[in-house]
Image (cartoon, rainbow over all chains, first blue to last red; front, side):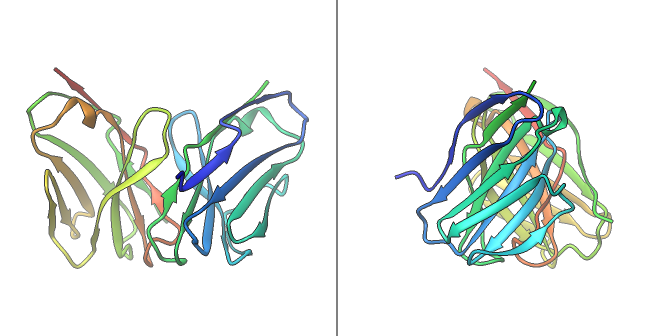
Length: 112
Length: 111
């Protein structure tokens, strides 16, 4: 009965590749988010979607493209991966745009 | 601008009280939060406080807010080894939207 799930849990890839991380929530929430946590544990919001529409985009390079096929899914596609993209990426969801956020377990991305 | 700072590390013995501190710069913050991150896991909301409150208590957790000094603290009474984790404070201006997280404090509880 996982609430917010992410796949894969670990992702190791070469510089220049394109990769996707998937997120699904079974809580019936309307709003979903992507956060990036760097090696120093600094956590920062990247995107927020409400009912499949983008509402927050925090100066993220356009190599990062979130895609929300439906309210329960928010996937993150990253083109031309760079070393600095190595981080843990967390997905979260909330009932409304100002509701408590529930976090997924994270995806650790390592770019070699 | 928005800036949230925490001390990086705190070590306590089991049974002691732990106090984790946080300072923030944005005086328009309306909500302040404490999250817990266990190893290899996502963040879990522990508690939050509105900016018009000074204190909030929830079982072993006590949150103190000094709005004048922009200082937030989390006190954990009778700290247990299971409390070992990274604790993040966060702030936002409107509900839970656009959380701005602190740098995180790693709490280590030894037996």
